[in-house]
Image (cartoon, rainbow, N blue to C red; front, side, top):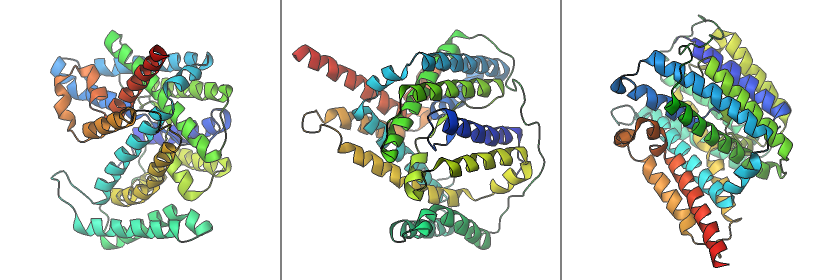
Length: 390
């Protein structure tokens, strides 16, 4: 496979963004990556652009400007301490809903991938059997083996599974050292003004800030600490800078991955030094194309099998959060309705939502976003009701 410019940019910016956040932002070993809401927005607009008579050059230029504008707004909101407002919106109930839906969404993806399910919906039995063996190996090492071996269960499972897959199923992917320009300025087209896309980008930026808040708030429980307002502000401002860079160089805007908490709880390696070293290795993968191309040949089913185990930890974090909720004093509908509606939307094909306006499709078709937004609305209603009663 060819290691194209997008891959080079991605690896380089992942490493750089992660290191900057660990040193100057929230200061936790949380990996940075493409925001899910941004992915949904870009893919949905690209799929619908021909139908509404918009060229990809026009769409790309409008998206690039929207990302830059969203990045600037994120920097400004971070500087004025907008984290306090987000904290009031994303209370313990909303946070719990978010963690449950995120872990369910990810585990569903990894489960399908580890079974080798193709576009026709059939299971690749040999690949599925190997994946199950990898899952069992990682689980045994994680649960039964103590010390450093247990901490490296995910890495052992990944390397062992890759070797086993290569022996059982000869690889068809080829390693290529061909590279392209590290960064290309405005590859999606020149800036174009479109008020609809600008407003949508602004909304996507707010959701991305909320995702950052949830990630930082969740990892606080792992480190048994609290994050002060200054660190939140710096984290948001760095996210804004990364969003601007993404818009200028044709990437998807970044944000901290809540899902990386599963890795932290699995490996028990909480120090920043190994994380920063990993970020530097990502940068090396970006600037040395043949290395990135080699690691991109790892079978998806192996990675999905290992990640399936890693994100079981994230689901466990969501369960632990239930103990912090005033279940005896609150209506369980505040928890169950957003969860079940979000899970239901996850299991509906995205094409079903094509009847909605193009700009709303990335939101209404995303079960995670629908569930979280519903939880936020129900919490706001619950607060107003309690105030009225009092």
